[in-house]
Image 1 (cartoon, rainbow, N blue to C red):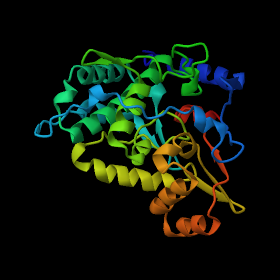
Image 2: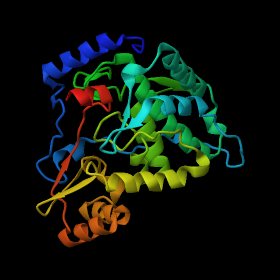
Image 3: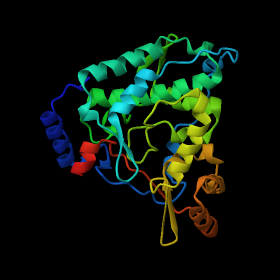
Length: 301
């Protein structure tokens, strides 16, 4: 883990990345609009494909998973930017706190999660996904974008999502496994996209506290409203509706078509935005900002 890098070294590394300009096909610092809504990118997005092995659970189990170590890390290093984006101070993470994060992930790996109640399993997988994402960024920091962490197998692989990062109940798991083979197909809730974080500016915010089973429903609702009403979720300019590429990539989770996405957006939009969406009745473009959610990097950009 590179959490013990000196501040000067981290700063110099960030400057080198910014000067490089193009990395992994991405213009650093820019959101890239697509040619039109429901572009070809959606056709290549990961589909929700159930891994049946993870459907097991014990609804009578009242045990709770201890997420306090993850909560302490978030409290220390997650803050809010002026725009409402939450950012992670990766460059400030101490070796001790980096080790504590690794210890939390190891503790999660040791849990027999299949014996827990489904409501506890949901928060387990969401918190674990977010912790693994932060940890993999720390291991390769500094980077301008998580897409620059090209550790996934395959000649054309991009980012860290398809490399096994943890073993749970003797099963090696990738970030893609957790999101697309466990969370999405088992719970079938589009609001999950608002609580899993991919360390990008365009992504819904990383929560500043660990998620809890008892309050997960409220957290899902609040996260959905926050993102839909943020410019990263929906922006209307000159009568044209630009939405996050999340609604393009994962359109199957939002009703399967443009009408389904619009209905979802109107459900969570503030009254004025909901009226605009209803009046326009169409989506025009999607866009996403892949810059790392790092306050030091964003301040330099």
